[in-house]
Each structure stands twice: as structure tokens, then as C-alpha cells.
Length: 168
Image (cartoon, rainbow, N blue to C red; front, top):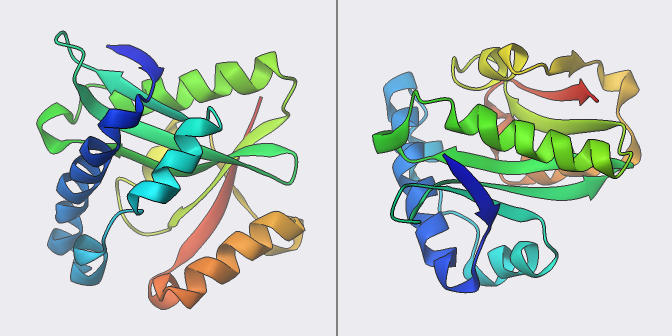
């Protein structure tokens, strides 16, 4: 699986990937998450322009997964990583996370961070297998606190969420 930067014309495909990947939240009693719309094209374009958006592509160079990141508290923060269900269980999400980790390490960024659902099997338990560790609330910097506040304003605190860190 090849990973490369997102092309501007592929942004609608990222939305399609996220919609498809989100459907599995219905199976765990989280239909609101499944129905949540992906980021608007203009926001995705901002990630693309800033060089913080990558896709994993198939043999035809078509995106099957993507990752976007922000710079938060001196780290690279995984804002979203989604794999289309047709390409699931092939370690593509892990490859995207490892790609980001390699880029971060090359820039001397100390860690990757993310926020996720604590009790969804393909969220926190998966990220732990990818080298992330839960962060205590007291260890959160101002940027991560702002991310958590934004998530709460969108209703995501309805289910247990945690911040995680992968030291590089």
C-alpha cells in the first residue's frame, strides 16, 4: 500500500471514505456518530494545503484510506484517520499512523497525539496496539484541552473519550 499526499481533487473521496468507515458505529449503538457528516471540503482543503493530509492508495492510485493531522502542543495530532471498509483489516490505518510518526520523528516532533472513544474496539484498544498510551487529564496541554472542549461542544462526550500519546 502506497502512501502519498492528498491531491485537491480527491477531497470528496475523503468524505466518502469517512462516511463508509463511520457506518460501523451503528453496530455499537452510536448512530449519531455514524450519521455525523465528515469535515467540509474547505476544511479538508486546509489540511491538504498545509501538507498535513495523506492517503493510502490502491494499485490504481485511488485513495482507500486517509489521515489528517494538526500541530497541537508541539506534537502532531491525528485529527482523523479513516479506512474504507472494503480495505479494512489490512494494516492500512497502522501504516498511515507509522507514516505520520516517521515524518514527525524527522522533524524532531516528540509525539503523536489523538482523542478517541475509550470503549469502541477499533478506537482506543486499536490505538494501544499501535503504540499509543492513554493520557491522564492532568497531563493535557492547552491545545489538547481545546480539542476536547471542541469535541464536547459537538456532543462527543456522550460516550467515554480519552486522549492518547505515542512517544517517538
